[in-house]
Length: 241
Image 1 (cartoon, rainbow, N blue to C red):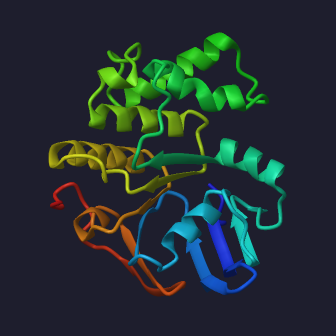
Image 2 (image 1 turned 180 degrees about the horizontal axis):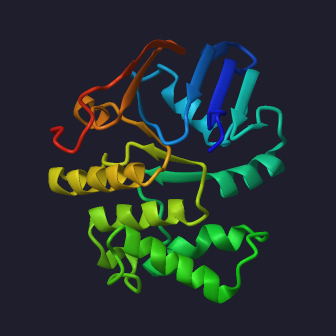
């Protein structure tokens, strides 16, 4: 295991400019995330958490500063190169699942492998990896079901399997329980705990303290700055939503 962090950002800034006004969304953030951490990012609307997650997910570039992902400075990469890094090293889980309705669960999970033309896997190996990912999230018996044949919690499990398929360096979960009822939310959080126990590095955006307390570390943003960053000694499956 390398001693370098999986994520290191230094003096990260982001400014959105128009002809009339400039808005500074991030104001010189410094942050390290080690391999295997489970981190929750919180903050009110306008705090910069969505901007930060977009940059961490290589969906956007900072205006200034450095973002080093798994040893590579990705902050100055062009859009094409960012897309390659995003596909190979980052798994996304969104509040709205973002599954393609006409595809079965296994075909939805396969999509990132199809976009990764240099994965070196045969069609059979890709299929086997997708099936294994669905089994990890407890949906081995639902692989041929389409999204409208699955519950919300099951759809989010498919989304998590899809996020894992390329064995990414980090898993970014943006309000992963936001569209789920309490029972389904608890199941998704339990799954995230299992993935974390297995060595996955997870960053989760949430506005709910009860959800955040499932993480081992909680970072609060306000006005584009980190205002608190602390280890959560109460992390665990017994946390209440």
